[in-house]
Image 1 (cartoon, one colour):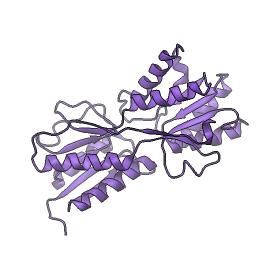
Image 2 (cartoon, helix red, strand yellow; image 1 turned 135 degrees about the vertical axis):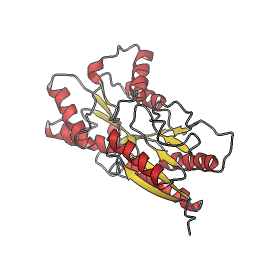
Image 3 (cartoon, rainbow, N blue to C red; image 1 turned 90 degrees about the vertical axis):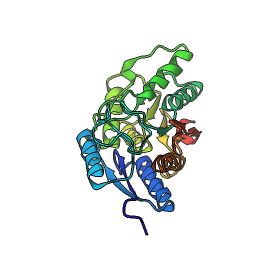
Image 4 (cartoon, rainbow, N blue to C red; image 1 turned 90 degrees about the horizontal axis):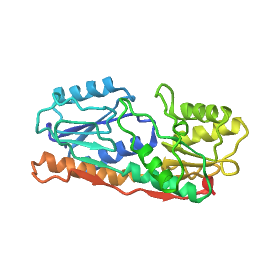
Length: 278
């Protein structure tokens, strides 16, 4: 039985993305073990929705919050100064110090890009994903860093951003087809998620290009479906269970009033090599 005051709010950008839904599942599971309930909401990649949910948590008396935020800047007037709050995955600007749990996105992208370069790819198309209010995208930084180390000039035409108006697979497919039909040589693609990679693969088939044979395809997330596609996807495992566990641990420490909190908590990614990049 939960104590009345012991519940937290959790905001994710969307629940139809396997990475975010996994985070939500593991956070709820971890908090149950601490006799704390979790109210999970989906901002639908909309900054106004996210702020509205934060205000709702405050009004309903949440004991803390974990958020995968799409905000460029956190509005500090919603919660009291000591309100327990943890960012997971993304970091909006804030006047108050807020603990963060996540991956080294720049390092992960550098790993992915250098892996493809070593495979012989030279024209790597990057689709780094969509964030509601345009936080700095560290994946682009990692991509640029990898190119620079290999002496390859950065070409901004090879970084394509979604606008968040359609599904990730639909927008990714459209961007990939537009680039190739526009005459850009492409021999590898990195997408922001496995779901986006599925959209890229299907779009390539429509214009008679094929993953592995013509273009290497690499994604983020390592969802259960990545190994079931044909060809199976090479992907970066972001370890959502470990991210959620650490975020819950940090939030629980804040709720207990501990003074020394680890402010930066990194969980290493691992590259899972499959057929799509051979």
